[in-house]
Length: 536
Image (cartoon, rainbow, N blue to C red; front, side):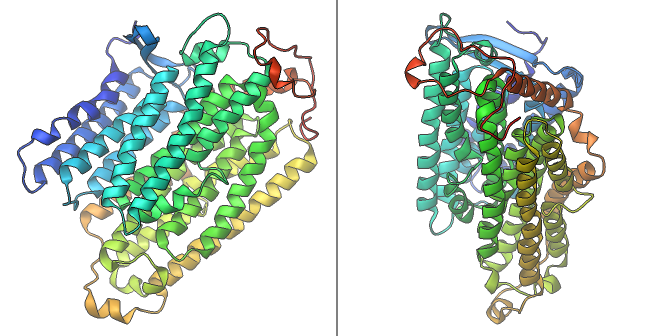
């Protein structure tokens, strides 16, 4: 069954993977043909998704669109089911843009180029598949497909401690994936009807105890990917050792899978449990913001500083998800899109700097503004966007989260005041660690050994083009936020309304005994509630 005339989503999902299988047979000894081939495939796929969404996606419709469903493995109940809505569509476009630019950023890869570009294209398919999948098993398969390329890319093209970082990444994420499979199967087999369709799973009535356990399982799985403290420790190691193009995808796209899945699975499919966990998400968001900023300031490795900065910024996504307001939820989605662009730019420029200096240690840099004025200007612009300078996308996203949480009627005034004040600490710390980084890199004391032994060159046209492709939408969204928000506004309104309805329905009562999880009927839901003493 297919509701669109042409299988746009299937085509854009499978094209990179199918095309990657031709790489081993391409006649190319120096890697030139393979580079152009991979870039061409990614560009075609990106152009395809832009055209498909422009022609077929209705911005005023909050429901799933462009639905494509095919029986894949009927014996397992597995369907190839794809669809997009206001939450997934902008993230698919973000994946296309960041992955295409990361392939262009990989232009100098000479070590095993066939394997490198094969993995990049395979990962491209997995990213789109995660955001578009509407079958729980298909979602899990795409989630797992993304893990293997990242592991190999870090382990093969990473830094000196690449094997440690890659192993830590795969252990954290693979173990977390078990929770997705277990909870997904439990939800699919609960009740009389067995289904893996995510829309039907969201319509089932689960006992509250079941929802709470399922929510906790999903939170652990997606919290590793986001990442949420204390499940974050794999990220600085992975970023510190990964090459710049891999870090662009890791920070620009893969972290957003965690935020997307929290909204799709936890908020939409388990709204009653979200009432109990929303204050927890808000508290974890505060911890992420402050902890990430403080630890970032202490880092001497440039990419590790950027990694902890990402942890801090993802805390705002948690606050937005916990807000119960349209504005807060909109801010969470905008923060994911904005951070994806900003983080990709910062990690790419970190790679550009490393190519010239052959070091990531801040104390070994200094005085680079003289020899790399273009890199300095681009790095400063991206850093200002990261610290939420007005006129940049980061400012709009974080402001929407703050205002959305402040306007929420679900929490007591005291709790909202504490959350907002503590979160504001992150806004103070972010300029400190970013501006001090810029000062040390570009105006600090020159490294005599670096100046004597290396010819430092400024950014070339390819590097300027890649950065500009990321900075233009960052500034565009900052000046005209509707450019991004109109793609998902109707969906975030729907999700926030559903979450508020759950607050009204779920009573303040003791969490039911876990032994009652198997009870077929859902628990009674009185008309009003007060949750955990902080939710009205």
